[in-house]
Length: 443
Image (cartoon, rainbow, N blue to C red):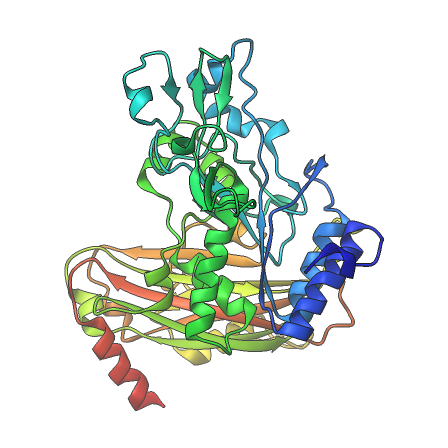
């Protein structure tokens, strides 16, 4: 959409007009915002009107909005080469927080991973030119979270290139100067040259949008919540990135890498030993829903590591002037080995004169990682329960409890959401066919 079609005004109003027009007139449902307000790095307080506008649009139009986290040249200390020697510690500096509007909750914020060292054949013979990263480590320019109230931001990361240290010219060089340091992309001046290279989170964000488009092409009626849940539910932290960031401890991995990198095949398909179940639903405020998860016998008894991963996505109303930015909260809990009646009695709202709700023993509660205190701060929540021993004593069905909790949005009666459940076993077991048969019988 060309700029002459936009009325003059502030960026949030221009964004609203552009996205609404493209959605209504052309049916566009996936948008990439590779822009940011360089004067508004997030300081941990309220997000701005730009982020709030994107959150409102994602909810109102049921669209997927992908936002790049922004770029920052490494501080480098007193010497330029400290961009190499102090990597990746400088990624965690306060000055490296993402730009507005990357703090929006109902969008997917994307940081960057390096595709490799970034050296070309000539550099390999030059001892002085030094790489900063290896493949799948955080890009040295990628801006970080966390987001509002400590929510996980960026949500995802993807390949966006790297930088190299060149002491001959006394600067850090990126893909625009040294193509091997960047990712291949189309050149804007296509009559002069069709392809070029670049480094930045603005190259990583479209890769996530591509994955979203592939899912939407396969599931054209999927909600934006379901697409976000499928993407995040498939994401993993690359081993190289995890090893490099683990040295910094604390929340470094989550702040820089979010949920990790999307595995498109894992997001869009099941296989024999890994089954993806999903659902779209809505809940009245201050109500809950219970979903039965069929657990086949081989998952319970066969030796080896197996897991259940749950991902919940919802799009609450927001208000950027409030400390409690989201107007509605949602959460989930995974239970096993107890009767549905006990679950309903535990969670249902009770009258003042009723006796206290029955407790659910701790052994029935599946331990999910990350914990609820971490995951419930965001609108895309993903956690995994891992099992290594025989769990046959807990039976053939587990239960997912999804709760919708009221906030300041008293005008909202119901909240839409999507949930994705991945059941997997590292051994090559026939889980898919067994679960499919169980679901057919139950329906």
